[in-house]
Each structure stands twice: as C-alpha cells, then as structure tokens.
Length: 188
Image: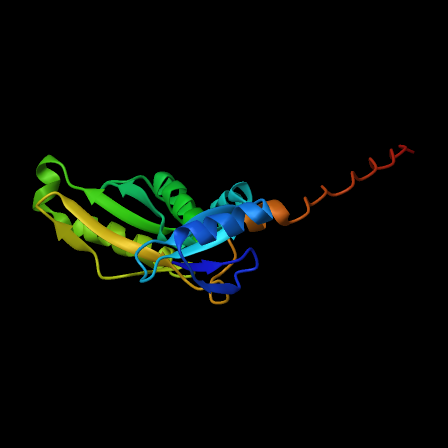
C-alpha cells in the first residue's frame, strides 16, 4: 500500500505491518483514503482530526449546492391579483437566494377546456420575474391538468435587487412636521 504522512507527503509503498508500526511510533492512526486505487492509499493521521476535516469539506460542498435547490410555487388560472403578487414575492425571494423555482398551475374541472387562461397567468409571472430569473424552457403542459415551467436565477451581477429587501433597508420617512394653527382674526 502507498503511505502518506500527516503532511500528505508520500513515504512510498510498504506493507501493512510496516505502515502500522510507523503510525504507532508517531502516536497516530493509519486511515485508508483510497481503497480502490492500485496500490491502495493510506494516510498516517489523527483519526479525530481527519473526521473533522472530512465533515468540514462536506459542509462546504453543501453550501455551494444551494443553486440546485428547487422551490415550488402553485398558481391557479383564476388567481386574485393580490395572491399573484404574494406568490411572485415568494418566488423573487427564492431566486435571490440562488434557488430554482418551479411554477405549477393546475387546471380543475372545466378549466381544462380553457388552458389559454393558464398560459396567460404563467407568462405574466415569467415576465414579472424576468429581472431576477429566466425560464429554462417555455411553459409546458404535463399530462392534461398541469402547466409547468422552471425559473433559474440570473447571475448576481445581472439580477435586480430583491424588492422586499430594498423596502426594509430604506430609512423610514418621517411625516411632515405639524403646521402651527392659524392666528385668530380679531373682528373690528
């Protein structure tokens, strides 16, 4: 097996007994890091420290995978304008956090006969979110009930600021100072 020391420097190819003896003499453990390699690769290291470093690498790689997270927003063909604005706000929050957003519109009952209303709603949603994300493909019918589209976030340098965060970062405007009451007019 090929053996590396605690500084990842190669010590060469040696037998298992020699590697274990060397690790014990340094007061460390022998950890197999590449079992499928020929010859297999082992490292002389403190096992607790090694596991801590591996966990840290795992957390770092999870942090970089946030772009692959996907959230779903559900709409209806007869959505109220206020509800539409709320759903759009949630989608913009997700896009600003580098998450993909699946917009799903489900047709029920007689709505299936007039899918053009659903396409209008979804296309308006895409148009309103264009400053923060773009559709991966045009909206598509999935089966006979669902209309789906996936929005991907734009790169940070090309995207507008989140409107919800912009509202909270602006200083509150103070009301106009009260005007003194008019002076009484004396009658002559």
